[in-house]
Figure 1 (spheres, one colour):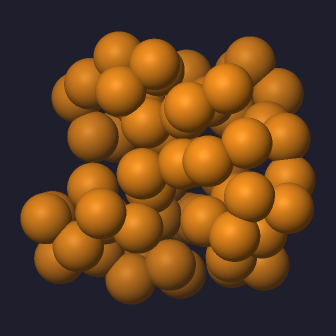
Figure 2: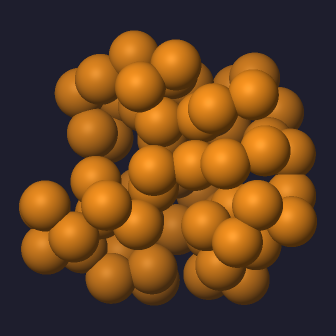
Length: 62
């Protein structure tokens, strides 16, 4: 799975650690998401999308 998390995170000037705190996960989870090595739960995908104020499908490419 591909993601656009890094791109959206850069637009907001957020670090991986800051995004992790906002969505309630460890920084390593964000690293794995950005690398496409982790498939998020629906809840996590929703929380990430909410931070960026976009739809889930704008971030995650299945």
